[in-house]
Image (cartoon, rainbow, N blue to C red; front, side):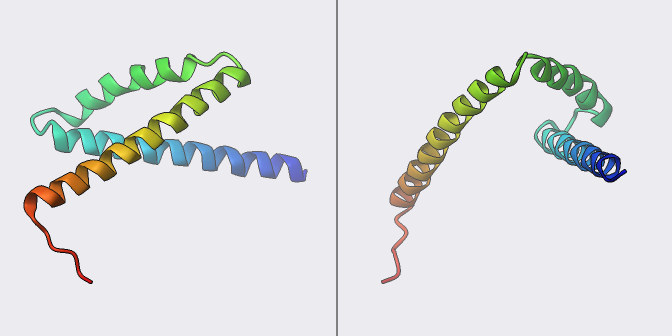
Amino acid sequence: MNDSILFIIWTIIVFTTSLMAFDIAVLLLNLIFKNANKQTIIFILSPIIFFLAMLPKNYIEVNKIANYMVYIEIGFLVFVTFLLGFMLLIKGVKMND
């Protein structure tokens, strides 16, 4: 009995989190493409997300993709940090001592 309640709550949490992430992605794309209709963005984004979700066939492939994503995120973090520092140098912002 306890396992079924846990499974139901876990399923609700997973789908709610996925739905919120999808909604945020649609809202952000709607801000970028102001002339696009929200339904059009949803119809374009849904098959792309479905296709990407079908790519890993097992746990090993999911783990490999997660490892690649870690390296991409670290690279992106370093790139953005240096980009912001470079922008500060160009703008001439003085640091507080």
